[in-house]
Length: 341
Image (cartoon, rainbow, N blue to C red; front, side, top):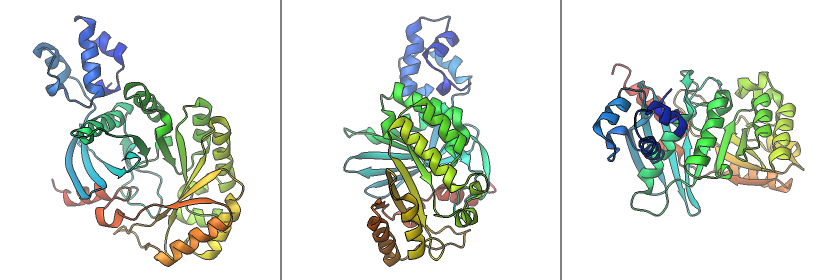
């Protein structure tokens, strides 16, 4: 077990030969996103013990701020695997998008994350330390660090279910962040949506839908071969009934694939009457994929038709093409440039 995956009781057992306050010091440092070497109030002998154990941290190997409101970074895990995160700054707070897996195995045809498949799940501690570290980095010199978390980077969070739940609990208990400030993005693993609903953790759940019909969704997302749109939306409705959290729908708008007025009307009819909010995401070009971004005209027309059906809808601001911010693009570019490293 990584040190970042341990709770206070685990650390007390590990450091049983020392006063309990030493374990508490280690626990508090981890919760602040600090590595062992920088834990200034620990004796050398305790540091040596801890340095001999897997930590489960993250080393930032690249950080860039191409816009005032966007900070992107690549992180290296202790086994050398690369993960990515993007911080989006808004007037209401700072939203951090993190990964839940190294790579992704869902196979969505428009996404860069799935090109090399999934390598492994991230542990709860690795996910938590990513947040704790970046919370500290981004809060330096300011009054506010990370205020919202979106588990939407590489990977399918509900495939990594146990670690995801533990991560939510870690963030709630260690950073005092309400689960209402955490959004989990999923392709729609029906049984896990139901299981998460029954836990009543209170986080937000966003469904990556991307199509109003099973036929079109199967063309884009292999997960549609296992779960129909009807049973997936029923599971989302179940989540709403159990938690009271509004249904969130993510819809990637792709030129000549799912951006027609006909498709917009179908989506509006599908969602009409549901307590939901649709987030339109204009597609970011991926070098290895043949898909293209929609025109601004089509985005506006699509939104207008949804609104005419009484659907609450917003459009995510388009920054991804400029910063390689679409899921998997940062990581994939790094891997491609370092194949022989």
